[in-house]
Image (cartoon, rainbow, N blue to C red):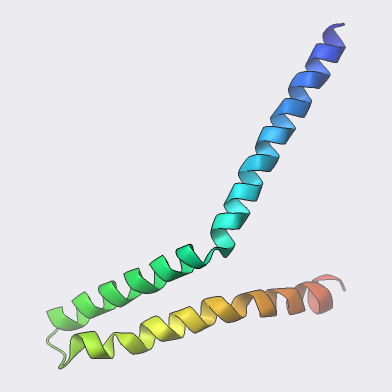
Length: 89
């Protein structure tokens, strides 16, 4: 009987872990997360450029923020390519 209870506990722990993993995966791939990262990148670079007196810091901060956004949008494609071609070999 003890082993059946132990097995039940193990299954529940695995199910809880799976829920956490699914939640983490959903967060990692969410558009909300990506938008936050672009916003924080823009703000950080804008503040930095303003601090070092670059002309038009908020306009100039757009380029790296957009570049970061494009990199996050293309990474899933390259990850899939890597998984199919390189990792499989």
